[in-house]
Each structure stands twice: as structure tokens, then as C-alpha cells.
Image (cartoon, rainbow, N blue to C red; front, side, top):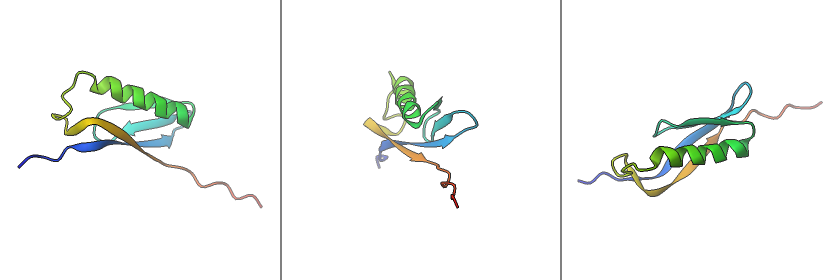
Length: 80
């Protein structure tokens, strides 16, 4: 029986002390940025570099996987 290949790489983005931090769940990639957009761009670049020259099927990934980013946000402060 052939294993089903994943079409997405899941990542989690959260606010750190100074920067936003993004970490992939399936592959060992972690990056950061000053803004959410910068962090997402850095993540795309880091994932592409990590996967460059790799056999995606061996990693359990389908060709041309997409990134699925989940963000942790703090609730807005209630202004009285």
C-alpha cells in the first residue's frame, strides 16, 4: 500500500518577545521577521532552501507543496 503524500506543509506563526516566529511542523524549519508579512516571506524562502535538491516523496511530500500557516493572535485590548 502506497503512503499518501502531503500537499501542504503546516507552519505556526506567533509573536515572540521582539519578532514574529514561524516554525514548520513537518520539517525542521524555523525563521523570524519584524512583521507578519516579512516572517511569511522568510518562511517561504527558508522552506524552499530546505527542500532544494531533496526527494520530496522521501519526505512524505507531494510535488510543489503549499504552505499552510496558522497564526496565534492575542485578543485585542478592550478600551473602556
